[in-house]
Amino acid sequence: MASIQYDIGRDYFSYSSIYNNYQYELGYYLGNHEYIFSGIVIMLNKLGLSSQYIFVTYSLLHSVLLFGYLSLVKNKYNKVSLALLFFVMFVITNFYHYQMSQLRQYVAIILSLYFVFFLVNGKILKALLFFCTAIFCHPSSFIMLIFIPLNYISKFKRKYTLVYFLASFILFGFIYVYWGTLSSLYTGTYAKYFQTSLNEGVGLKTTILKLVNIPVYIVFYYLYLKHGPICKFTQSNFFKFNVTAFSFLYMSIILVDIIGLYPRVYAYFIWFNIYPIYYVCKYFCLKRRWLEFVLVTCFISLPYLYKVIVYADDVYKYKTIMFN
Image 1 (cartoon, rainbow, N blue to C red):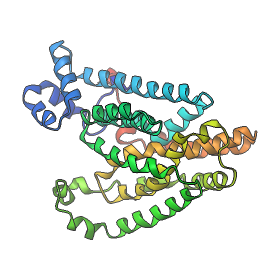
Image 2: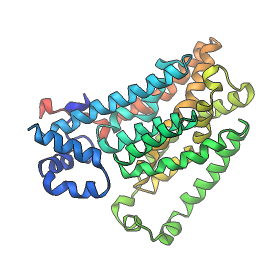
Image 3: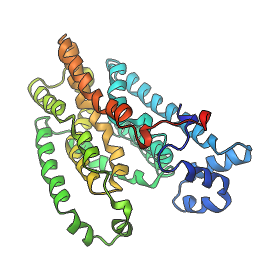
Image 4: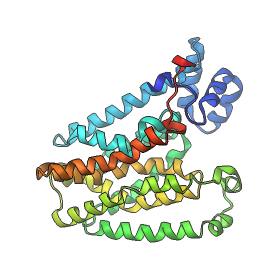
């Protein structure tokens, strides 16, 4: 489906233009060290294929990398409920839709999942390999460096996770209120974007949709602090890291309302939102509290269904080359 998309997101025709004029366009991407994208464009051109094959290639690449990651998690933590994990991942991250528009960045985002996996499990050389590969996919992947101190912090007692969450609420709330002043003080590389339409947020409606799962997260903290790990997977350092990262970074989601570029940053963080919800669903499964399980799964699905069915726009409004 992703490989036969047409005019989804903002960059469909930009990619086609880059592909058809690669001799002139690729200089910018090579300058950003995006060697993987540049190599794919050159290779497909040499094979005489149309620009649509960019989307075919990246669709395959996203799928192989994502399912490879899930296989890695399953092999390491064989008690993890892979079907449940994938379901929560699908409705929370909306990756299926966004990867159709953010071709280059989504390779880097999925590679960041590998980086976290190997970092947490002490495989530093492998983590470094995936970090370097991600850098050659998209420059935004430098944000992955923030995961290194979070890995250390995740070793602390689980009772601090709620403290991290509340502290982040205050911090990002402060940034939200005083963003106008703070952005005027910044004079770095991206300062020029703060004065353009690229700095316009996504709007309050979209932001509220991204916050709607807070009741489930409140249930998570109640259960997690009271009962602790409920299975071997939730005992792992990997799970602890994801909960710690979620606690620190979730509330930064409010910044998408005021900073137009921030959704590209938060795309790396939203994957941590999966694990608290996984915990809640798994808890109700283990306790055979099926009514609560169904209620939670329906509740987390509603925002996704709303975006796909009721308010289908941008990446959620699917179009295909079959009818264009």
